[in-house]
Image 1 (cartoon, rainbow, N blue to C red):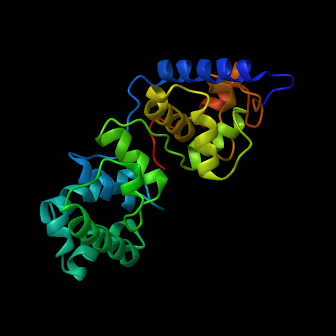
Image 2 (image 1 turned 60 degrees about the vertical axis):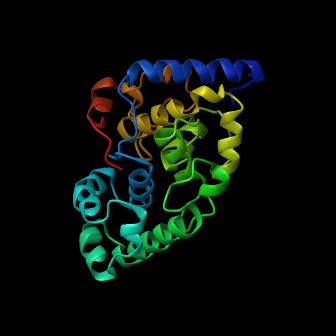
Amino acid sequence: MLDAETPTGLVRRARKIDRVLAETYPDAKCELDFDNPFELLVVTVLSAQTTDKRVNAVRPTLFAAYPDARAMAAAERDKLEQIIGPLGFFRAKTESLLRLSQALVEKYDGEVPPRLADLVTLPGVGRKTANVVLGNAFGVPGITVDTHFGRLARRFGWTEETDPVKVEHAIGALFPKRDWTMLSHHLIWHGRRICHSRNPACGACSVARWCPSYGEGPTDPVAAAKLVKTEGRA
């Protein structure tokens, strides 16, 4: 929090930053491709420790072979491993998908439940994944605290928390619930394109004037412009 910033001042500054980021990224959305809740749940699980671009590349083949939870639950392990092999950690990810799809069949008749309390009971599904699915497949507001979101929330001085659940609750208190899903997209897009973990492009940042961490990266516009990524990759 900025020096002498009141709780009301923090809320106003946080919401101003989000409004500017909304203008900066009018096309912000989930960067994983999906056609239904099951696909989004699966690709979100697969996106761990790889890029959305790579997951999107294997998605058509994966769901052509296993279009729903019942089909995936009955998948032959070696064939599933072959499809998702390019993503890395394919043995562990195959195990996760088999257990996840089997649980969906056994507990929810093959359907993805639209409630956080149910989603987090599924193998390999934590609050981050659950909130991605709720917000983007079901229209239920949720805050997705990935590494980008947590980093930016702390750089913006919105919270000092490092635990993802505590970050989620702290930031949720600053914004109307209806804004949570898009807020997540705004911060994740900004984190992927401008506010990098190392060497953030401060001189190219649209919200620099409201950021207490301004100067952690190069402030010269020319130097900062060289650090900007035109699309999300992580």
